[in-house]
Image (cartoon, rainbow, N blue to C red; front, side):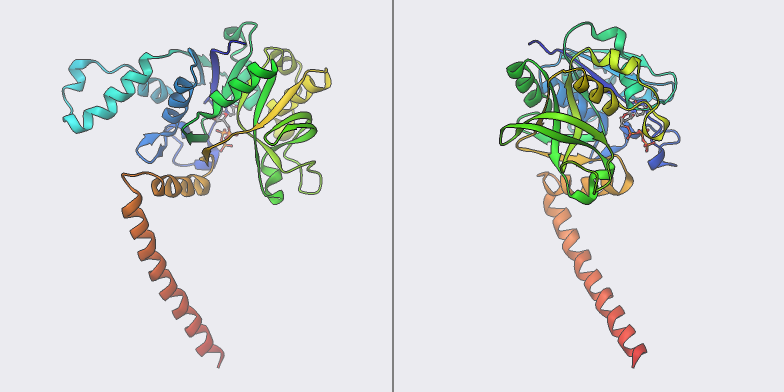
Length: 308
Ligand code: UTP
């Protein structure tokens, strides 16, 4: 099965990051020294993708500009140690074809995917959500492509989450476990409460889907929160008898950058794993840890004094 196209939805409003996202797209916020969306591009290219369709709107021009090819002449204006980041970006951009698709209204993830229906054709294709960043030797999307080709079916990335987190995710109900990491899915449920969740296996932002998803999205009525949900369309495919698998991505770290708190944690975690930053960040964390321990113990002493 040949999978060469991906849709990257990047037309959301990013309201959880306001006011930072009033002018700057969420996808352009930095994760260490790169904008979030560049990690998506790198993973797609390393997974052998040939065509990337970015779903954008009129406020996302900086995404297009970030991926513009930089001319030799302009490169000359940078010092050589700075230049290498840009020549690297040029090299990846060269490896893949881009097209930008407009989502006219931010009506949810399902609607964003549906907006790109004209460019996909009749083959299975990938979806990558930029605010789920996967970093590791074996790219997450490539792992899904392998399973999709093996099973000749749709595959969704899944990951175990604490039961208390199920209201944040789409959760799968398992039909059959085929191997320690591969599951056939019976149902998908969008943001179930802890008690309603049929498992703790949550859908992450990577999918390989059959083009039949567009028919399911077409007839999609308004789902949770009044938006068109991708999960509802996947559930329709399952009900129509289509086989869909869930695969636990192996050997990569996942960074959630969808909310300010998770984005901050991701920056810290990634810097601790990055050779250019880890020593100094570790030292800094140790320093502030000591400082906070002192402040905390002072606060305890103070409250004890007040109570006596
Ligand atoms: P999110 O669910 O994180 O939504 O979208 P959001 O709108 O960006 O952020 P909040 O909830 O307002 O804070 C996941 C991905 O889907 C895209 C987003 O750009 C993001 O990359 N998306 C979401 C669209 O392309 N269109 C939409 O209507 C909604």
